[in-house]
Amino acid sequence: MKYKFLEHRADAKFQAFGKSLEEAFSNAALAMTSVMTDYNKIKSKLTHKIKVKGSDKKSLLYNFLEQLLILLDTEKFLLHKIRNIKIDGNELTAELIGDKFNNQYDIKINIKAVTYNEMEIKEKPYMVQVVVDI
Figure 1 (cartoon, helix red, strand yellow):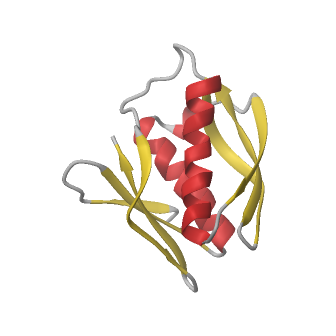
Figure 2: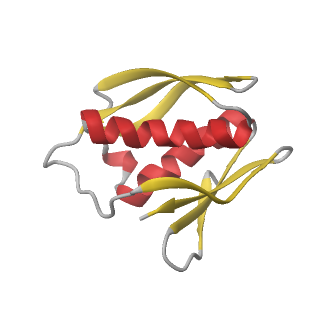
């Protein structure tokens, strides 16, 4: 299982899993995208290379997911998959593969922001928990 959604009164809450921290972060990005749309239907037409930093792992996760929302807002980029993700200390690099939003894709819910509320990161097994404001 890549991720699962949990009950939350007003927002969207999910846990993402992986065999590594990188895989858990990647699956968190896919879970966040699936709040908005079916990422499996998004075509692999565009690539964005990103580099984000944080002061710790939680801020790194926050900044990574926030970068996806910024790309959606500024460039209408929808995520399909992630390649070559690497976490080195408190720095993350990755290739985001996806497509530009158009009438072919249906956005069910708009995410306003990533939050630190109830955010968790666990290792061995790797799991991240995130709440996004919708």
